[in-house]
Image (cartoon, rainbow, N blue to C red; front, side, top):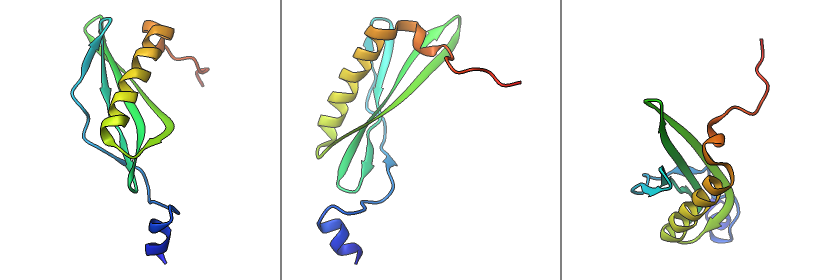
Length: 101
């Protein structure tokens, strides 16, 4: 049965994190593409890093987009990382959800 699911695109298994691509510097941030392998496709994912006051801050993002090529997933993750930085800047490291007591 699993042969038929894989053959016709059903299932595909759980996402598996791939080795991160080399980081790319952009406006003082580092963007690392971390595509996730899902069956025979790669799901768009990445990490944005920046050192602030001597502490490395990170922001991980995962999107629903899937590509058949790892290289395409890496390129799109870097592009999405740039977009996130342009829209939010260092504000992306601030917690926006309410704190619980």
